[in-house]
Each structure stands twice: as structure tokens, then as C-alpha cells.
Length: 44
Image (cartoon, rainbow, N blue to C red; front, side, top):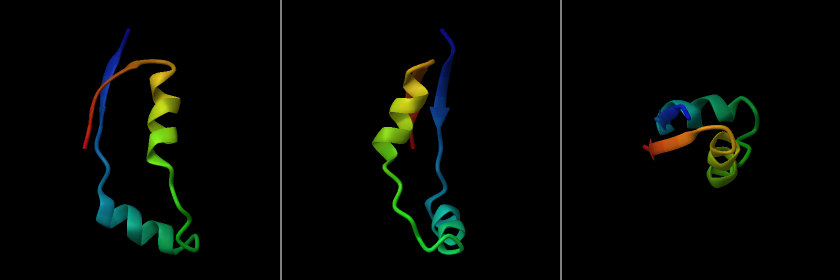
């Protein structure tokens, strides 16, 4: 089973989301969608 780490640049993400009207992201749902396929090692 492949392993991976997730790194999210919060400042960049906030800037990009402003162009979409600042939608909310459910990070737990996002991470769960990855976990269905592979093993997550850590999230930062």
C-alpha cells in the first residue's frame, strides 16, 4: 500500500479561495477521500 504525506500552504490556499468566493473546505473529508486508497503518514 503506497504511503503519502499532505502539506497544505494555508496562505496560498486562502489567496486562491478568494477568487472562488472563499468556499469552506472540510479537510477531514478531503483527507478521508485520500485514505480510501492509500495510507496517510501525516498531514501538515
